[in-house]
Image 1 (cartoon, rainbow, N blue to C red):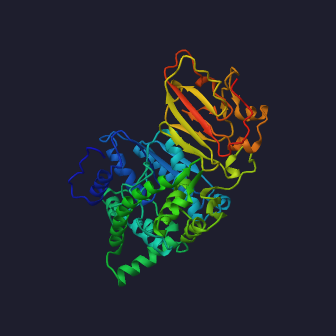
Image 2 (cartoon, rainbow, N blue to C red; image 1 turned 90 degrees about the vertical axis):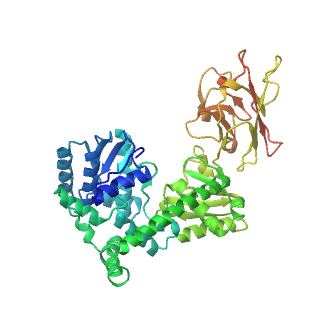
Image 3 (cartoon, rainbow, N blue to C red; image 1 turned 135 degrees about the horizontal axis):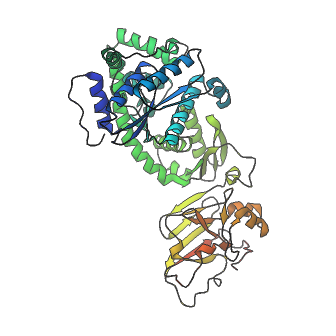
Length: 493
């Protein structure tokens, strides 16, 4: 918490809780904090710690409880959390889902489906009710278990960093530097009751076997206090990973060709100039950018993608979990989701979806088509004729263009105000009315400013961008075709 000093009272959990919030700046005064409460000891302790400080820290605290529908006692759990919310006079947000049904639909393990359902519920609830933070009760022992779990799965340094104190600027873990003994001691001192989850003793789950069998074995026969050792190792690795990732993000940005919604296209040629270790890191960063995380992405998947990058010709698609697909065409390595049956209204299905951003005047080459767009600022001339330059060169009123501008191709539902029409029109109808072939529709660049289409390149500018008597600055835009003999059939009216 900014400008917040941890208390000096020698009580372990309270002090660890406040120190963690201060160290990682997890909470600021005035935040809305939604606490994920299952009813177990960890979440009950976290809820009371936050509720006790809500007034002093000017927090708006709420409770979120998701009933997974997996156990007969789940209704009892929900009732316990409801009573807890009533005692603390806090708003409660609950939902029940059928995780087994979600498991079948999402093709995930029961654990993965439950986790995905929880995070989705927490995020949607926070967004709907104005909470900017979601507090999770993971602690240091959980972190130690996660390190071992990822190690056994063959994870690299990224997975060995364990659980971060904050994820995505929203999910926070204020207890991540406290252990389970701290939490149980706090509940005893405060005479607080909590529920026991019987699934924690089910050794059919790998995490439970690590918690109940492997870690006790390591503590007894190899390293006393191994949980603390593993947690410290995870913290050190995570700190190093944060620095490495900052470098990788820079390399990723230098490699990105296009980033349409749900996809990312990387320059395979640029990737090949790096060492295999950097290639792996950049590819992982690209996958995380598209998918949101790296769950179910194994080392073999990364190596398969690198094989596409380094092969001498086109390849793919490579099918990954969650219907994620990777294919290479030329130097364009595209990461995205499964094909759509509606190729005409979903250019990504044709493999040529693209989007670029210009922060200032200059030239951008569209790798997918070979065409280029050039923007130049010029002074207006009294006798300037906007129609005289031809379909490949147009002039805009500079006041109508705000940088950064986006250059992309057609998206379903696109509309614009064609010069001379006197109203808006669906871009698809404009293409049909002017008999523009489907392959040309998908190739045609659009220039947008603040989300408005100002130019259907080679065809028509927007009425909103036309030159007028008040024009003081002119923006000249040129479409430079890769195929100079391509026929442009529509001229400015």
